[in-house]
Structures are given as structure tokens and as C-alpha cells.
Image (tube, rainbow, N blue to C red; front, side, top):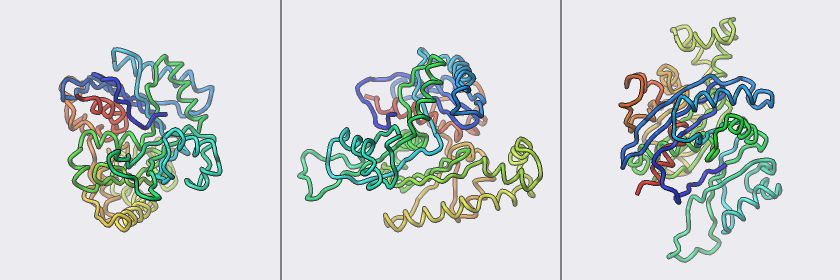
Length: 358
């Protein structure tokens, strides 16, 4: 897994590939000077038996078909995963080189428990320094290094890698969706992220991540095991219907269904309100903009209900709004509708293209 950035190679194009719970999404973006052009995108249904060895052939077939639809020059991709049990957190350590810090957290369960309050010995782990030292400034006494840590269970990462290998697609990186959506926002809205405190919500199928940015840095991340699937299950139980029928009712969002969604979303609203208050107190600032991406952000009614329950104005973030889509199938209205859903995919590709601009 790679959460840092490699500036050695200049890229003119990139493919982002996002493994969701029920779908796999892909984008092919080409860079010409400072202009980013969406050459192609595709969304395919994904096998529900994710993580099981006997599901690899079916999953690989889906990935191979998607990559064929994108028609990129090579079968390689910056890959996004979001497995259950993934970890994104911040930690302070005594000054040391990053490889030593990684080994200290990954190979020593005592250190993991001490600094992260969890054992990461069975995880793939990477980290990025949040406050890189200024070589011209003397180090303060007892100074700490602040690290952003990302980790996923090793067996889960291996499963995704095996799917990619079976599909004959080379993963240039494997990253967590929490980080790729942030990278995408930083790449497309640098002035907003620099000038305001921004909250970016990633409303997924099983999890919701709350990402707080200030001065262009990710200061605080909190993930909750709540997503669109939990809302669908609540509707199925209350309406006495099967999950597919409940999903259709969620999409229609009649007035009677809206009241049920409001009841289902209360746990998320409480956690979100609590996280906002915590951030305000810790950093003594107010959130200027709250943006939402992920599948849940494609529903204006869900954002309206969540905003009403938290007292926050939540805007859908169209990850394609700064990208030239004139050569892509579909009109701009359709692309704006799916823009929030493609945020992790676009972020994986865009972060690598924008960092290599000369």
C-alpha cells in the first residue's frame, strides 16, 4: 500500500480503479499541460462475496471487462480499496526516519497498542509525515513527528492483489478511499482547502468517513461503521420488503420513506455533530464548508435529511467539475450526478497527475 507520493516519474495519464462493496468503478484521465481530460469511465456491478478465494475469478472478470472499456494505453491502475477494519489515524512519535517508524508500529505490537491503541502486526501499513522538518530550522527540544497512518488487514490486501493479478492488471498503488477522496479534493479545490476549514464526508455503502482539513492538511479523520446499506436494511425491516425493493424505495424517496430514512440516519447525525464539535474545540475554528462524496452523496434527500439533523449545510462534491469531460459519453448533467460517486476513483488518478505537473 502506498499513501505517500512519488515525484520521480512524470505522468501524462492515469487510471483510477475503486473497489466498492457492490460496484467497481474506473476512470481514465489524461493530462495535457494543466488541463485534465476524462477520456473514459465505467461502473460495473461487483460480486457480493468479496474477500472469498472462490470469488476471485468472477471478480477478476469484472475488473478485466472494466479495464477493457476504459481503453487505457496499459493495463495498470492506481487502486482504491475500503475493506472492513481499515484504519486511518494520526499519531505522534519521537523523531525517527519513516522506515523506522513504520517498523516500530507494524512489527512491535507493544508500540502499536501504546501509540495507536490497536495491534497492527497483521496489517499492511504506510504513513506520511504531516509536519516535515524544515532543514534550515533547528529542531525544538522534545519535538515530535506527526504522522498520518493508514493500514488494512494483510489478508484483505492480498485478496485485492490476487484479483488484480488474475485480471492481468498491474496495481501501481493500493490506497484507502478515505485518503484518495481527500487527495482528489486537494487536487481540484486547492484554494478552498487552503483558505477555509473544510469537512469532507465520504458516504459509502458500509462506512462513512469524516475528514477535516485546514490549511491544505488533513488534521482529523473519523470513520463510522454506518452507510447506505444500513439505511436500506432499516427500510426493508420497516416496510417488510426484500433488500432490492428497499433500495428502490430509497431511490424514489417518497415522503413516507423520508421519515424512515430520517429515523435510520440519527446515529450518523449524532456522530457527525459530535465530531464537528470536537474539531471546533481542538482547533479553535469553525468549519467553513461541508462537502459530501460517495454513493450516499448522490441523493439530495439524504444530504438534506442529514444536514437538517446536524444543523449543517451539506453540499454534494462533484469530483469531475474541474475536469474536461467534453470527450466523454453522457451529458454534463449525468456526469454531475455521478461525480460524487466517482470521487475516490478520480482522486486516485488526479493526485498522481497533479503532483507531477512541471
